[in-house]
Image (cartoon, rainbow over all chains, first blue to last red; front, side, top):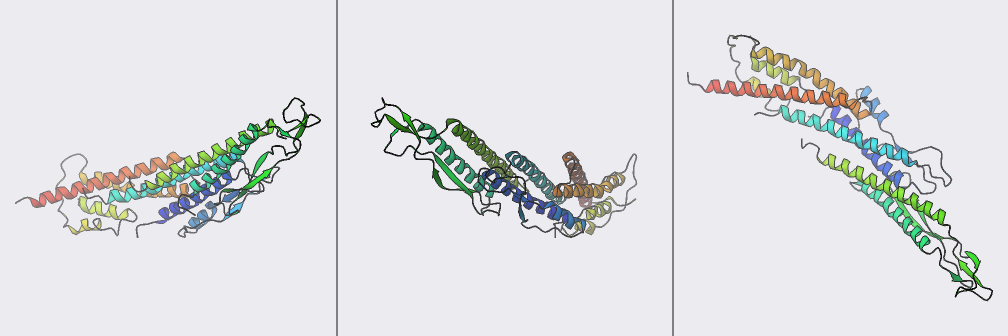
Length: 115
Length: 134
Length: 113
């Protein structure tokens, strides 16, 4: 009743970003594991398509792919610098989306005030 | 899968890196441990890690076991050593200090990366818990 | 002169998601007062009208920027922060004016004539 498309889009983004944070933590934990290929989460293109078509975005777990970056001698292709950058960016985007969602809630709440 | 997954995943990384540092410290401490030639030399300990639940992106890492280095070590001529055999030879472990120090630095760097993952995740989770309070 | 209260109600229903909420639509239930002659300078209704005109636009801008933030297409974070704070201040202004108008009206209705 109260939730509009923007709020659902933000919720979908938060779910995707949280999943990306999980996956990046897993990559960092496995930086020395032989044969381990880094995992990637991609939810932005799905979200963008849904919004462009005017559909309500779906809030769900996104598919996890393996990265095809070149591996080092023991078959591991996790690059610690890349993962750290992704993790920092994900954290900041998560805070931004939370901020945006909170802003929507507080707008509605302030409109409901009667004094 | 728990609510605060990143903490569990990064925690498993911390544990694996600590085990690695333990193994390296043990190797370095025993780098000059002599044994007599009829016994095995001190063997270098290397831990084996594998990804838990590989492919899901949410398993973390687990320590699958340990492998041991060469039992023959280096045979060194030291007739004054109390453990020397009839010909004056003693066994020393086949451990390279440079290699061990490199591993120690790598393990420490990975440990710190996992720690900062935990920091970042704690900030994010805390901010999520404040949603709607402002 | 249009009644300031009916002006506020139409602005309130323009904010997305608010139309169905109780307490907002009810303002229209009170009888519209006959307008009093304005004295001098800008009168209350036009001050109100100008501030609510932009409100719908600000909300749309904020929504569009929030959607961009969700898909990762936002080029500048400050764009979103400024737009959202502007919208919040404008909404607060309109709501405060509405509440003041309602309480002033109630006060007047309470007067013994």
